[in-house]
Image 1 (cartoon, rainbow, N blue to C red):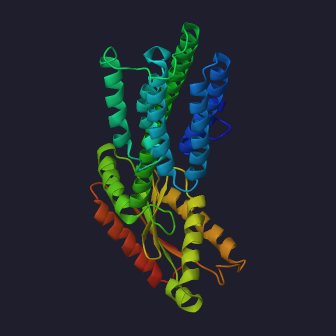
Image 2: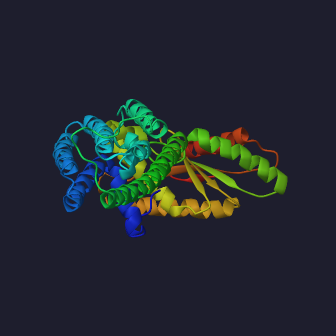
Length: 362
């Protein structure tokens, strides 16, 4: 599981918050970058890029509005805007300005933006990005990278632009790689949590939260084999709620379920930490007492009876009348199989029912 907010560092909290709203933060960060570039280009006196960044700021303002309604479309349009901006800026200023670095940024960013906006056509965006970048780098000597009518920036301006774009590329690439790794970490954690939930569902009763019969029986077979090998002693008690059908008929199955849950909780609080509790079926519950003789197991069962009596004697819902348990307690014998042991516990339980209920039969 993820750490609590108090245990996480500020950077980890920021990262998780970014991952939850990466599409919005991506658009907002791009808007701030273009806004900053307006002032840089104004200081450099290169007005064609000033107006281009103004247009980009207006576009990202629209994308932020669109993201609340159509996240996938907003991210896709924003990524196409990066391609167009980098291409036009490169044609205006030449390769020496470093605006083609934005293509590299976009390739890396798409690795986590696909998770931020599932269904976004990442392949349709990456393909032209790779193509344009390849053409610019490989055929740079043969392409007219200057639009007629727009004079190129002077050398100091090109140097500042290159440094600015290099810094943006390094920051964006580093952050994107980190966010992509955190996205993978989150996916792995989600998968692990889902597997744990599936294992819990497969091994526990959905009503009471107790171990279910199938999982319990597999463990009991292993326990019998281990006890035969090392000579250890353990006991199994099968419990049945007395007159449970009458309770259901009188008060309804909804109250019957609440009684089952309350009885299961009562048993769970009384048994030892090393013991296990299983819902065998219907109103029957099985308790396994590890490394315990029948005397030790009987003491625990007596404490369950006392606790349940104190709980139900108050007459509060769902206990509209006293609820009692009958136990069949069997100690594992050498060579006894899981099936034989459970049959013995069931036989003793039936005998206890025949002799008046609300007892422990050994």
